[in-house]
Amino acid sequence: MWRTARTPDGPATLRLLAELDGSVLAETWGPGAGWTLDALPAMLGDGDAGAADFAQLAQHDPFLAEALRRHPHWRVPRSGLVFEALLPAILEQKVTGHEAWAGWRALLRRFGDPAPGPARDLGLRVAPHADTVRRIPSWEWLALPVDPARSRTAVLAARVAPALERTTGLEHAEAERILRTLPGIGVWTAAEVRQRAHGDADAVSFGDYHIPSTIGYTLTGAPTDQPDWRTCSGRSGRTVTGCSGWWSCAARCAPAADRGWPPVGTCPVATADAAEGSQLRSPARPVGPSGSTPARGRCPGT
Image 1: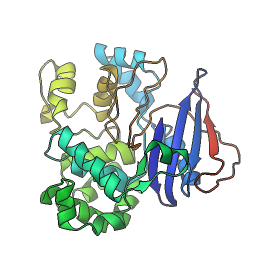
Image 2: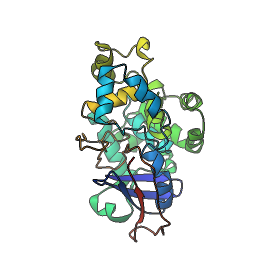
Image 3: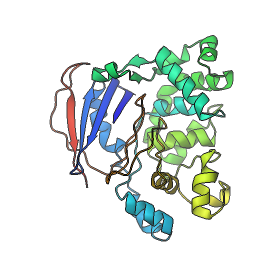
Image 4: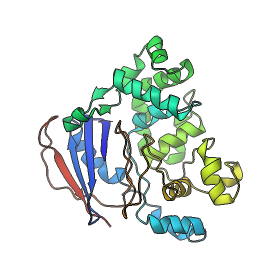
């Protein structure tokens, strides 16, 4: 799996290879390579402290029990990159998936940067910096095409991006409160960000088109995302979708087959998160500039 990220240290490219023994080999390039390797355990779900408790609760529901049997190592990932998760979520608001990703693709190509290392030759791009986003004029947004309502929200979020990044150190409820103080950020968008950037297992994207037909029906027997279903955590929903054959991630990745190890999404613009319950054991490694020998880390499976 290839992934790009705009880390606090600069752009980075990450390549993950899952091996037959359950380990994950990580290679990184670019100024943010070291940051990315340090953050990799959380990106792979190592900080998911509630997984064991959820496994016990899931045994009371036949479907969830079967989902966990098929994917026993599934964990809630945490990228730690708030604006990276927020920007595509804003572009997804109130439009079809085709419209959202047409705008996202055009934004990456027009204002993003080439990925460091060999991913550049694959056409991968790094999402634009918040400073770039806040300076995009209205007519450029329309040409992407992104309507004024979404572009205003994106620009406003870009202006306060440093403050938003600090929410990763807060309790999940407080992080949601701060996100929703921004005009244009509601319960759905805040949940999408908390799932990916904060690793919040209880963030449910209420109002999402797919929840009533896929998750609500599976768990309750009827298409619903009403408040009486809110006792079911976001972890349940994402376990259901994983068992149903598709994986929801920061970039709406391609379907992942059941390979006998936790599903890993694959995305052409490399903005996806991977899920794997493993602990990174990375030896001392030099971090070179883009195109140089990559930094490496290895994640033995559990």
